Amino acid sequence: MHFSNSFVLGCLLTSAVGISSRTLLWLHGNVPNVTLTNSTTSMYQVSSDSEFSFILERALAASNGGGAATGEVLRAAAEIKAGDFESWYREFKFLEDQLHDMATSVDSKRFPVSAREQHFHASTYYRLASFFLHHNASDPRLEFMLDAQLADFHTAIKLLPQPGEVITLDTKHGFTVPAYFFPAQQKSDGCAPDRLPTVITGTGYDGTQEDLYHSVGVEVLACGWNFISYEGPGQSTVRQKQNIGFIPEWWEVVTPVVDYLETRNDVDMDRVALEGLSYGGLLAPLAATEEHRIAAVLAIDGFLNLQHLLDTEFPSDLIDLFKSGNRTAFNAAIQEVYNTPSIETAFRWAVDQGIWSFDTADAYDWYAKAGTIFLDEKKLQQIRCPVFVGSGQDDTVAGYGMPEQMARWLGDKAYYHLSKTNIGAGEHCAIGAEPQLSMVTLDWLADVFDGKTGNSKVSD
Ligand SMILES: *[C@@H]1O[C@H](CO)[C@@H](O)[C@H](O)[C@H]1NC(C)=O
Ligand SMILES: *[C@@H]1O[C@H](CO)[C@@H](O)[C@H](O)[C@H]1NC(C)=O
Ligand SMILES: *[C@@H]1O[C@H](CO)[C@@H](O)[C@H](O)[C@H]1NC(C)=O
Ligand SMILES: *[C@@H]1O[C@H](CO)[C@@H](O)[C@H](O)[C@H]1NC(C)=O
Image 1: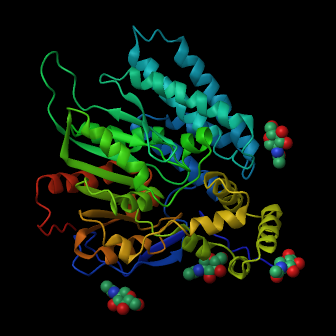
Image 2: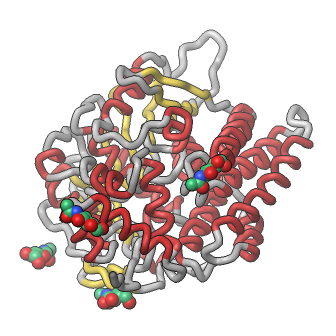
Image 3: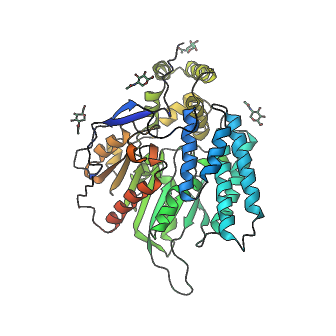
């Protein structure tokens, strides 16, 4: 069987044609048609392997929120061999061991800031080290790296001026939801705290909630609001510790988080927002179709259906095999492509991560399950609150017009924002330009919380 080498998951697409110069707009039926063409201009490539480059960009981006240091990441980038998962593991393992030793050698009572920063960085590098290890779910390094990254992260958040709280929430469905609550205000003796706006944030296909503290949490806290992150089935800790893959009933993950907020005396329940990043840009709106206690949803970036995305990116003969329903033939074909020496890292990673995160026996089940978690016009109409729909002008991972379609389907409930490449924000989820993303998302949220949602706000 011949597969073209145009496989492009994580490959590069430009969406520069026909976009309105108004990039911030309340929708009244006029979402721009975003046309995608191939381009490599979204960001400087720090590896000849486009998938490695993308994950390294994410590591560099973590530096914006105190999760890494650019020199440390670039040193690892210089040593990693393109396409070599073990070399990736070795370099980040080396870095993480060094930083962890540095962190534990600091007297954290005298120097809490130094200790905190090195623990945060070590935690990030543990997460990175295991990123390409999901081919074998029994690889003992997965469990070890997860425990190590959690331990460093927990140590670090206890050293924050307002320490983060580690929370485990029960659900009615046989799994628990790990969460972190970061209070915006100092607890003052005797006085009841103010009830403040609170942003719930969930990650996506391959991220962790620890990443979210650095990419979103620090910015939310800086505006004086509470921040809470969580993970559900399919995501890092829940998948690894509880062996559950992604589920279509995502509200069953979010509802316990909202229930928990109701128990706190520092949360204003009229001003609670739900944000999701990447695949979370599907999961958050999906939860909001059933969970109506939230005042606003943010989909960064709008994501509708993973199976449809894969249909676009996988070779068409593979898709035809899937559609024929011949499991054996489909799995054999996936394996054949997987074993092709010249196959892109992105393909191998997508298959490994897919089977692991959906907790399926094989690629066929993964592909099938991916199609059960989706948003369409009918589901989106069940959302009762305003929705911020983000899109990246040169999204190399998702995009494909999904955010624009989501915004069109939402109609007047949508607020669409296109992050631009020429100012470094055009990559998936505006990776690397987190302050720009925070500015537009949190300003919008402030308007929603202040009841100004009816005003048409357009900025050039
Ligand atoms: C987008 O494309 C569709 C179909 O090609 C067309 O009907 C519609 O008018 C276009 N919308 C805009 C805003 O250009
Ligand atoms: C993108 O690149 C692939 C592989 O080189 C090519 O087959 C395809 O036609 C290109 N698409 C566009 C829109 O240029
Ligand atoms: C997966 O890892 C375990 C533990 O190291 C090992 O025993 C097993 O053989 C590995 N399986 C495959 C398919 O490589
Ligand atoms: C599925 O494909 C295999 C080849 O991989 C073939 O031998 C088998 O007959 C096919 N099964 C059906 C039901 O078509």
